[in-house]
Length: 236
Ligand code: OAD
Image (cartoon, rainbow, N blue to C red; front, side, top):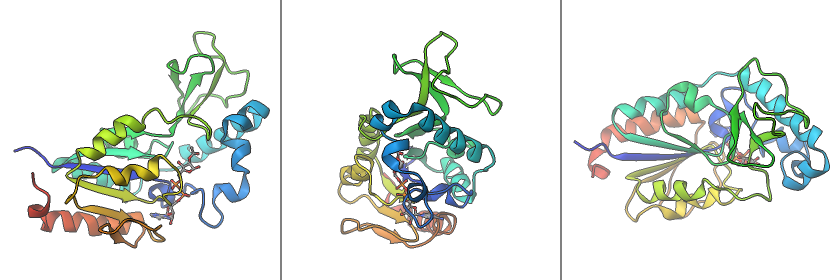
């Protein structure tokens, strides 16, 4: 039997219980770093060393973190669903938890790419040295963080929209829904498809969205229970 397609859109909140800072919560990253200095195309042009430093620090924090029960629960759901994760996160915790289909909308911390050829990407390892504006790849290109900066296009949004259009169940976890185009994905769900939003401090959502006001790990337990008990609502 064909498995139902479960499409999940995650934000920083799913990694919060792994010890990774979110951006807009109290004490979040954007309170401590001016976002347009460290995460925009203009900021990178003005002071690339600062931007490299910011992402080196994020990478160090990531290497000390582990996936949590919410990441693992999503990987487990692959037994019963075709699960597709669309994440705004640049960490690799979904992959490390075992999710096999992860689309990164905003790039990946453990990768760098050529400043002159956006298709030339290299992976870093836990032992890679910190990157600087002088870092060159194996081909000799100057490299930059593989991150979608503010003021840049989000090339992966088109495949993400296609996935959401095909979802039998759509779940949003741990995002303030403040950043577009990611926040707009909700609008591509087909009518009648159950939509859940797990967040302890949820943003406004369109009518019909089932809000689970809980942290990601607890919210995933509630969602998993619901999915087990309500197969008739989504089996295609
Ligand atoms: P935000 O920091 O904007 O929002 C984090 C969300 O996670 C909030 O809604 C919190 O209520 C929620 N949250 C906090 N703790 C949680 C927990 N334990 N479980 C579940 N949810 C929790 O982060 P994002 O929405 O992911 O982009 O931010 C979107 C984008 O803005 C990021 O990808 C990044 C940032 O600028 C770039 O840098 C390109």
